[in-house]
Length: 347
Image (cartoon, rainbow, N blue to C red; front, side):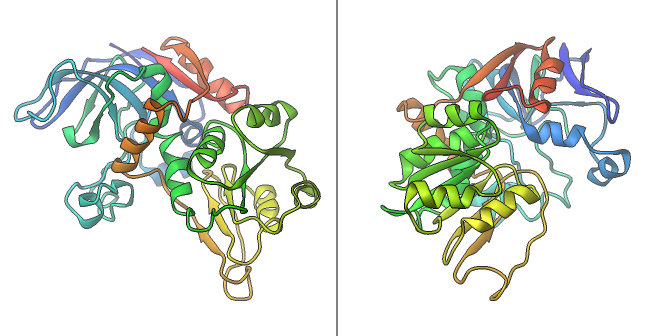
C-alpha cells in the first residue's frame, strides 16, 4: 500500500510503498477514507536531530493523527465493531485502565508515556496511508452518515478547541469577551464553537487581513490585527473590560504579550498552540483569580459531542483536499501558512 512517511529528519515527507498491515488480537484494520494534516506534524518535522531524539519517535513513520475510515478487518477477539462500519479514530490513546482512561480522558493518561503508548502519526504509524491499524475498538467512534472528508479534522481541530473552551464555560457568561489568537485550522473552529456554546462576544486576532475576513465569515463579532496595540484596539472598539478568556492557538512570545495585555482579574489564559513561552506566575505575577491552562487534545466523550455538533450543522471545518501523492505539498502549504483552514488527504 501507499503511505506518506517522515523518513529523514529535516526533510519533507515521502510517499512510499509499504506492506499492508494485518490486525493482531484485539486490533482493527481500518481502510482510511480521509486523514488530516496538522501543525503538530509540522512541528515534529521541524525538530533538529537532538530535539527529535528526545521524542524517541522511530523513523520512518507514517504521518497523520486525524483519521476516519471504514472497518476493513477484525483481529481475533474483536466483536464491538463490524466490517463496513464507518468510524472516526480517537487519537490521544492511553492505557485504557486507569482513572482518567475510565472516564474517557485518555488524553491525560498518566501511564501512557511510561508504557510507550503514543498517538498514531506521533510515535507510531498513522493515517496518511491506504490502511491503518487501530489497537482497540474502544478508540473508534461511530461516524454514521457524516462525510469523512468534511469530518476528519474534527478529531483534533474540532476536539482540541472544544475541550479548551469547555474548561472556561464558567467565565464565558453573557456580557463576557472571548479572544481567539490565531484563526487557522483550530482557531476557526474555536470561533464557531464559542458562538455555539456561549453568549460571549468573540474577538479574533491574526496577522493578515485575509485571516480576519475568514474569522468574520465563521462568526467572530470582531476581528483585528494581532499587533502590539491589539489590547487598545479591542478596548476602543468592543467597549468592554478585560477578556474573560483568551485562547492562544499560536503560543509564542508575541502572542503571549497580547494575551496578557487583554487579561484581567479572573481571566482564563488558555495556551493551546504547540509553541513554548516563558511567563511569570503567582499571586503578584498575574491578575488576581486568573487561571493559566495548557489543555491537550480532548476526551473520547467530547469527540462524540463534537460529532453531534457537526450532525446538527453547528460547526463546519474549512478544508482543502489532497491526494496521497499530493501529501508532501499539503504539508508544505501548511508549513508556509498558505492554507485557509485544514488540509485533508484522501488516500
